[in-house]
Length: 434
Image (tube, rainbow, N blue to C red; front, side, top):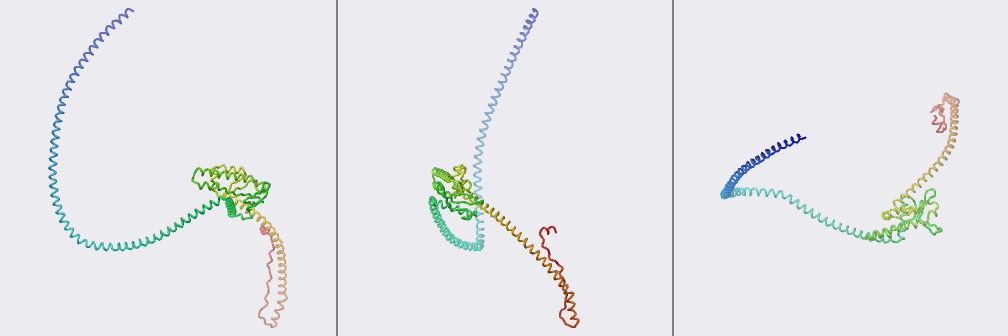
């Protein structure tokens, strides 16, 4: 342990000496660098002063050169201005002299050509002048016709305006008339009849108008009873709830218009409830359990359905079917088609009966025809026997008169027998077998 301690101390003393030498070298190096840097700075300062002096001299030289250039520019500008003025003056004098000579020469030539061109232009302008005169006459005619047409157009527009006013007045009268319940009812009934005629349902044949029946609840009177095949019936009642609708289309106030449309919906709903309360299907036993409520206008129902789409479902729950001219004529066409089908069925039955009767008569006729054929065959046989008797007995006796000297214009010819037999009457089954 003692030896180790001595070795460590010796090592520490050696390292301290090395550190002192190292630090001394560093200090000497730093001093040397500082000296060299000072010399470099002095050199750079001297060089900077020299460059500054050179720059100042060059600036002075440039300023002198600029002054000389400005003086030379001014002198050249004056000289050039004087030279250009003199040259322009000389050129102007020469140009004016040449222009005057050329002008005189061209004037003399132009005068000679002018007369020739005037004549040529006159010949060219003459058709144009005539065309302009004709155009002016046509324009006057067109203007006259335009005035007449304008007068006619003004008169036509005046009549149209008067007609528009009359139409407006008639429309107003129609609106006022449609506000009356009896007029609306007649209009609905007339529309029903017209639709029935268009669909092929003849009046009082396939439908009834304004029939009435007294019940326990009072008098009920449907506007139409459409008769179906097999003694079935469809009850139709026309309703024209137009009062609120007309008020809504005549007003310009949106709030009032919406209020009148809601009242229009309530009127339709009330009419359907009143119609359901009449219980038509109980009084007309041949009618299905629904009644057609006819409204004579698509827009009357569409305005209500646009505001309350569930109105159609509500009325169907009451066994009321809302119908407008479009779908009502479809119903009538379907009924008309049913009548046609029934007529076809009846015609088919009549044709069948007629066929049976005809077949029976043909059978009887065939029997008579068969008997006639048998009679004809018997007649043919008798005919052939008569011909044979003629050939065997009569003709030989007649020819003897010729031998005796009797003169005759025609000779007795033999009659050929009939070989064809009458065709027997056969049935179609026999023909198919043959």
